[in-house]
Amino acid sequence: MSNLNNLISNTDYATIRMLSTITGTISVPAVAVAAGSSWTSTVNNTVPSGRQVLRSNITVSGLQTFPADIVTIDEGSYTLYISATKTTDTNVAFFVYVENAYGSTITLTARTVSFSVAVLLSPFQP
Amino acid sequence: MAIDGLQLTSDYPVDMVAGMFTLSASPASYNYIDLSVPHGLPFTPLVIGLWSTSPTGIPSYPYGGGPAFSYGNYYDVAANADSSNIITANQNNTGSGVTIYHSILAFAPSSYVGNVVSTEGAGNSFIFDSDDTFGKLVADGEITLAQNATGTITHNLGFTPHAYVWSQNTSGSVVGQLVRGGVDSSAPYTYLTTSNLVIVNNNIDTAPYKFYYRIYADV
Image (cartoon, rainbow over all chains, first blue to last red; front, side):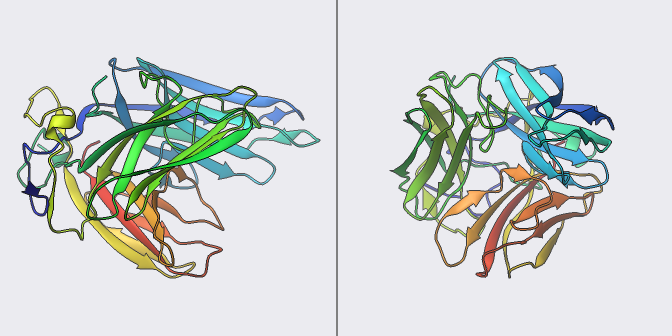
């Protein structure tokens, strides 16, 4: 048994190591999206194989930097879905998606979405 | 070398995982399962983790998101904790049954002073490895905010760090990570600058909320 308080490091506890930081940008254009249609953009990033935890910052131009793997922005007539997620064992996808579930054409607001993702080695065995 | 480039520094502690949990739930199509397991910790842990539809845990997804990100066809998965249990919510909004596998890590809140059972044997041993950077926890703490109040935690790192934030309704006992970002007029949200972590308690709930945070100098 060990005391967690004020320890700098301790061989009694598992920890989380950082394998790498990956960055990227997706630009959302000011384009029209018809009713029932969607707009999407994906940037794929290769990462080492194995179980990893992602710790993301997602920055949306004109707004803020959000410490989350998933960000949703209410743009009024639509919602901007943004995520950083592992899609395969060796791929982290940066993903921006808009679904037009309304009955008329919408025009997207131009945004720049920037990703900064720490790829962390999970202490769980693969 | 700037702090965010150091592999290990004695100025700041590394993350110490106080608990590790794996569990699974199998909600039927268009159904949900709330599954709780005892954590055995002497505090309410701050949990993070991943979930997967594969028992190998690969690929894995963050809580609040998942592979079926299309409108109306998705999984909604969450993990929270109270003083006794790890609590998972497993919602399946697809036309087929699914098994959801959770890999959950638990941290102790900054206010906890005491002993816990070692987790070193449960996973990757803490052995300093110069190949990887070890997380530098530059700040962790708690702040209670009234409804619609804003709290600012100053880190003054000069760059935008990474962070985790959890919230707890002070009239309840469940602590959960703020897994989704974005400005919200009716729910708490948080954002980072090169100087501050800002927490905005926009909330339809009138009870004050307590927020727990951990800020890391690894970018």
